[in-house]
Image (cartoon, rainbow, N blue to C red; front, side, top):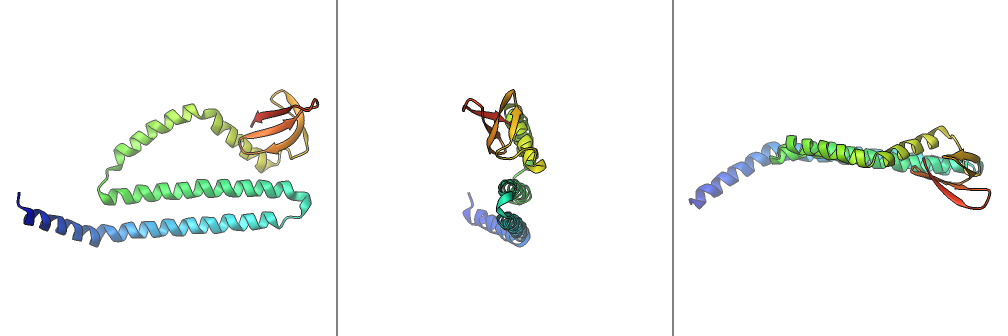
Length: 169
């Protein structure tokens, strides 16, 4: 082995990467950070708006608070995912096998978590469309009761007999 030649080749490769790919990676990361901060600012503005609502619309404030959290989480995840897809090839990683594996794993998780995803989407639309509020008397999934709590995943109903029913959205 010729160590000086190996060292020279490694140094040449590193210099080329620092000149050509490092600025691209830095720019991608800076744009991702900027987009994440803009998303945080927008969701914080939504939170401030929800907190400025008068007391009678307190439920709407909770709905806006929940939606702001969901919007930020999904948006930040999407920004980081796209940034990773852009940066990793700059380090010499082939993204095709990774994307194929992620697609197969996504299908498997999708089948396994189908009801969870359905419940979350239904919960999002229940909040968005203001289908019912805390204190409303509703009938859901064969259970009648008063709505005591709501999340994106489930609704808590207090039945006439005092029993608490957890109904998936």
